[in-house]
Length: 211
Image 1 (cartoon, rainbow, N blue to C red):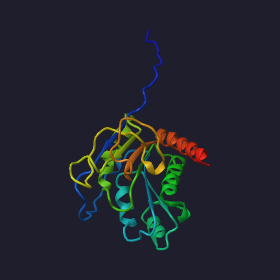
Image 2 (image 1 turned 30 degrees about the horizontal axis):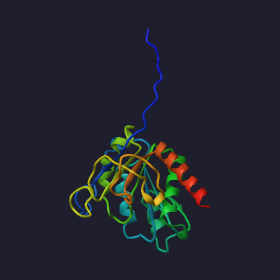
Image 3 (image 1 turned 120 degrees about the vertical axis):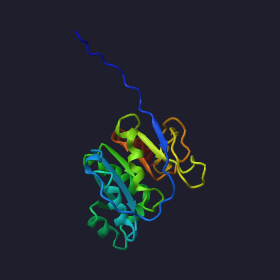
């Protein structure tokens, strides 16, 4: 007779990956909705970005179930265009800064049922079509954090991928993970729901400690 046994799961590793060449002209195409991972959300912090935010939302929606735009109270039509493009919009005080925008996105995404989140820079540094590669190990449970590095590809400013994280990106504090990361300032990474929970607790503890 089969006997159930309980084993203690080892901590999920973290991993860095990197996109390919710099983007050129944007080519719009249809994407098979069946291939979009269930529960994958993209968070885009932004401010005064009306010229490109609509395109970014449309592109990210090809690869994610939901796109959350955290708008730092833009003076232009950023929030309106993002909403029209299909994003879930959250507006915050601009004085709170990008760190608060990112943290707000990480709070909202689990409330809306995410299983993983991709932080996506609204400045166009990275490419939306790299999202499926970025999220593979997070979605299959072998990593809780995967960071795109700009410094692993041999060409300055062009990201590449390899396993390794030392700290969580410094924009939200020094959360210790292993192994070492080459780009702690990266604004393109995937994180699991569990990783968000741990990260949130860490940030709150750091905030209390500095208070």
